[in-house]
Image (tube, rainbow, N blue to C red):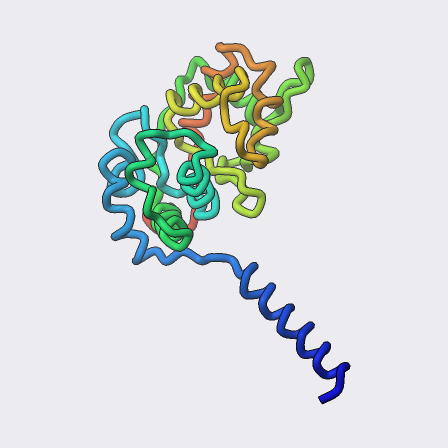
Length: 218
């Protein structure tokens, strides 16, 4: 057996191993339905919670949900309440749960008509005066987010929850542990309380049109 042959096989084996390690985890919706049963107590059976203190998970992209659960399990994202529910979840479990919620439809909210103009201006155009970029640049014109870039769906999210997160970002208290979300600290810094209220209200009334939603609407 020649040295060249041995080295060639080693390279092929190494490449195959790297592909196996890097192979993305794909969530199973059916398996996720059972695994998400306990989540329903707070987030609603279909990802639409009854209380605005909990975020809507319905329609949220799988990768984002799985990543946030993983960050909480690792302790990077502090959430004492969640730890009791996620401590034993595997990476596959997280993606299965994410896939389940991604298959659901976020129930549409209603924006305050008095705040729509300001909220829409910020969401779609940002603010040149404060160098605030448009939210839709990352989260999409209909608020569906960008799964590839790990930007979450915002459409329909409760205004109370969105406002609380925006204030945390602005005050340097939100998601500093997540490299994908650090940009939000800079984005939210110039926002006033009035800006945040208007933006959060507009986002709650923003409806993401997904294939699943279109099918239900027929």
